[in-house]
Image (cartoon, rainbow, N blue to C red; front, side, top):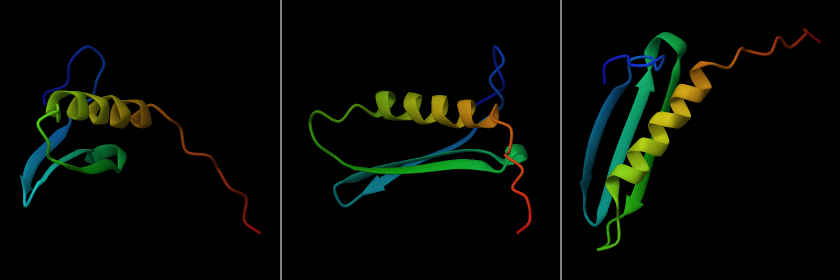
Length: 71
């Protein structure tokens, strides 16, 4: 997915089999990624899942790492 409206470019991959659907989204330059597996059913709505994961990785890309002092 190309960058758009402040959202960084997202690499995506869909898949599935054996009664499951899968979705992976990542933003490599921020070392962020998410992978989701759900059971397939007549009520499964793939777009709801993929849009939510894309929103999640976008939000995470805007977070700044917390510096943890050495102990």
